[in-house]
Length: 73
Image (cartoon, rainbow, N blue to C red; front, side, top):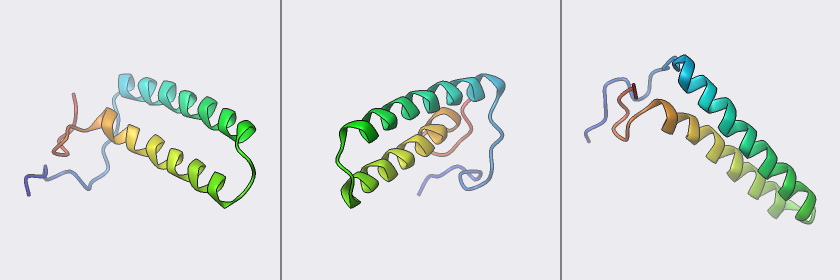
């Protein structure tokens, strides 16, 4: 497995990465609000929103790390 040695360590984002993360989080927030309005209440809606939350968190990894876990510069 060719993962970078820092793959599972905390990585402090650069200023540019933090700005990009904030923009992406804002987009996810808008999307979730739209779905919250349009989807019927229930466990399935909760599941959809949790999956989007996961996607939002993984987007931070995408912004800060390469595919092998190396820090993205």
